[in-house]
Length: 306
Image (tube, rainbow, N blue to C red; front, side, top):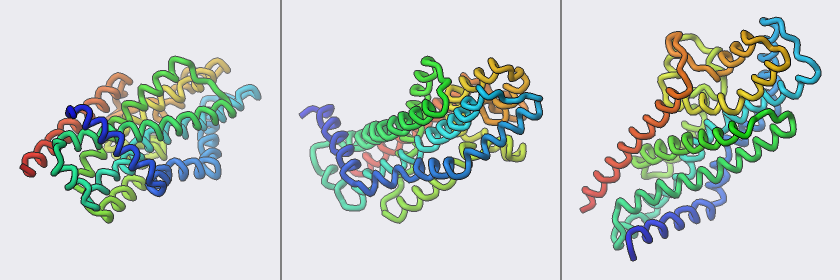
C-alpha cells in the first residue's frame, strides 16, 4: 500500500474515532451552546443598547423599517464571534483523538507498523481540519438561518468571503491545536488546555466584548494576538451589509464609522487602523509560522523514535 493510501486510511480512522465518541462531540459544541444561551438571555439586549447609544450620539433615529436591521446587526455580531472562537475551541477538542491515542497506547501500535511517523502526524492534522470544518459549517448554517429569520442583509459576495474567512480561521485553529497538543499526553492535561482555551480565548481575541470597552493598553495588547484578526475579518464580512443598510436608512457616514470602530470591524494599533488585507496577512502569516513549528515537532519526534 502506498504512503498516500495509508494516509487516507488513517484520516478516515481519525474522523470515525471523533464522531464515534459522542461525549467528545458534545464537548466540542459546549462553547457554541454557551454563546447561544448567553446571546438569547442577555447579550442581545446589551448589543442593541450599545447600538442605540451610538445612534443617539450621531443624532440618528432608527425608523420602524430599520428594526429588523438592528436585530440582524446584533445577530451578525454574535455569529462572527461564534465562528471566530469556535474555530479554535472546536479544533482543540476534536484534536483530542491524537491525545487519546497517546493515552491508550494506540500511537505505539501505529508506530511499530509499516506506517511512517510523519504520516501518522499528518493524518491527525488533516482529520482535525476536516472535522472542525464540518462542525463549523453546521454552526454557520444555523447562524444563517437565525439571521434570515431576524433580518438578512448579507450579500452573496460576502457569504462567499465568510466561508473563505472560516477556512482561514479553522486552519489557524487546527495548526494551533496541533502544536499545543503535541506536548500533551494525559487526560488531565487535555482537560486543562480545553477548559483554559474555551474560557479565555473569546476574551483575549476580542470576540466576547468589543475592544472599544478595554483600556488602550489592553486593546493594543489584544491586537498583537493573531486570533484577533480572525475575528476582524469575520466582523467585516458578516456585519458590513447591515451597516450599509443603515446607511441607506440615513445613518450618516460618521455613524457608520462609529459602529465599525465600536464593534471591531475596524481594528487599530496605537491609533493606526489595520487594513483588511493586513489582517489576512497577519493571520495567514501566523498559520505559516505554526505550520513550520508543527513540521519541526513532527520531524524531531520521528527522529527520536528511530
